[in-house]
Length: 466
Image 1: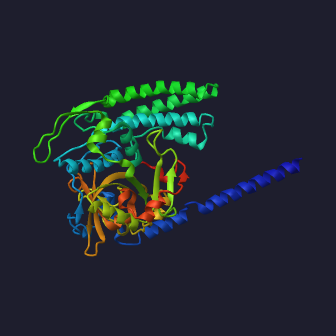
Image 2 (image 1 turned 90 degrees about the vertical axis):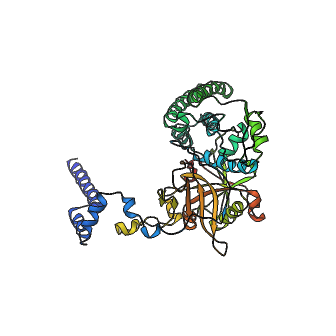
Image 3 (image 1 turned 180 degrees about the vertical axis):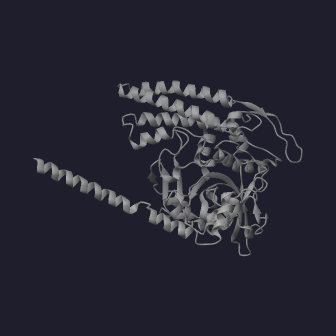
């Protein structure tokens, strides 16, 4: 027995030693650190570079001054519109972008000098619908354990102010539109963080109650009655923080020539139907995601704003093909919903998006470059912001050189409230584009009739535009 204990003790010591040795092989030891420090101090310029970078803004030091004078602010084709909107401290870029595309249609149709829709109106119903979508998701998964991946996803993503084009379509089709002066912004629509935190807390608390009722054997019909009481409380929170949306209103406008229209009464739905008169179901979404097969139709489960609405569905296509449709749309005077990874290589002062705006490789003497596929696979890049694509500049052969994006960061941001995007930047950081079906060729249009490949809600491409 004693020999056995000694033997086991010896084995444990040897195993522990082997483990420690294996760990030591991958550790930073004094010899390795000495070599790293020696390599760092090899160049005589390193100390000056360290002093400069450590005391200054990295982005400013990486600014490529040779690129500052490239290009101009003129465009071969530009969609007519007026004014720049401002989403302020909110993640509603998707809503601003969608309504800015519709706004250009209204401005041209009625020859208006200026016009804007109430973003607060549609945001109110967006939040109410997202709350209901969450509750229904909780009810549908009430029989699954808390550590189930879908249940976990619901609790991590109960509600937010981000979104995408499909949400614009479903909310507008269901609730309509109103002019901005009929239902103005509130402090909390422009500063959404506190309201969003309160809503998330309430929804999570309610979800536990709904799951418990299911566990206690209460039927779905009675659980939904409880859900309706919870929705009434969500409505109360929204009305107190955003204001209560109008059910009807009277409104008239003055056109660019000074003519004042007749005063008419509308509901939000009749205003959209009669005044705006735009079929949002005529639009389709494209994605450029090189990590997946091109020419395939994809759908993301639960990536919608309205329970009885539509999941986000897109056709994955090469950028050159997408640009053809975008160019046709702009030349015909119609803007488009566009989303991208706006934080990459953006010069906010000049208002440009260009792959050569900053040179971090030369500043640090390190290669940071990855292609688009590698950036997506490593979660280095994804869609972060939506804007309206409104202009294109082409060379003598008709090939795009640069594009203009109408932003929603206010008129003093970028170039007169816009961002000028190089064609190469379009290739690298564009993700979504929504185009009217009439600009598509027959072959591409037929691709939307295919059965979509369903992706889970936690797919990397789920990330909403903010």
